[in-house]
Amino acid sequence: MDRITSRQNRVVKSTRLLRTRKGRLKEEKVLLEGVRLVSDALLAGNLQFYWALGTETFWTDSEYEQLSGQLQERCPCYVVSDDLLKDIADTQHPQGIVSVVGAFDHDLTCCLDANPLILVADQVADPGNAGTLVRTAAAAAASGVIFTRGSVDLFNPKCLRASMGAVFRVPVCQEVFPEQLVGFLRKNGVRLYGAAGQADLDYTQADFSNGMALAVGSEAFGLSPALEEAIEERLAIPMANGVESLNVGVAAGVLLYEAHRQRYCKA
Image (cartoon, rainbow, N blue to C red; front, side, top):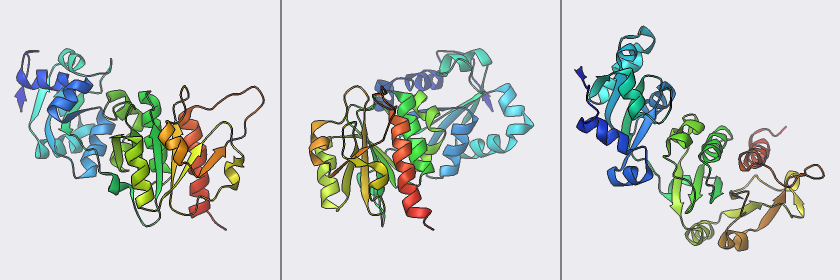
């Protein structure tokens, strides 16, 4: 296995570029950090692996022997020092391995199935919230997650880590214009529900059993006008007096799990 020692090495410089959105767009590649993300990416089976960089400890540790072998079968692998890996990675304490894969954004049609449950994240800017939304959607058996234009880049390293690998287990789309999304939903007969602070329908009274999309927006701005106008049902989550709103990830979790209960937990 080749060893890289210089920060000026072509592979190192190309990898560091992927810490920024501009670099990811230019290279059409994504940086994955840590054992969990790299392992989940390998399990996905359909991603192109370009290269992997790991410390001596990672490549020789028996605990990671299987992962190490899988990486070496899929792409060129390099040994780097702990200090060089820290310089490459986005985290302060990387787990000893990073890998570069091809971008894996999906088409809107990938979010459709026989009875779709689609989560729409409208202008969600916080990477932790975005990753949590993907993770929760995957856990609730949603058919896809759509991020509208103005949301955080799904390939942001913090977003990927917050998703805990769920980004490889549920179709995700990003940079979708709200008007485009509304047309897509109408064309395919998918009803649009929205979480709203002022709504007449308690979420427990809503019918989540048939094909639907559930829109949640940023806590600061709510839903964009195009989505707000297209909503068929506005859902309220009861809260104690004096509480104005829930975190977007919590709100989505409450609603998605009510959908999951209605669809899969009937007595």
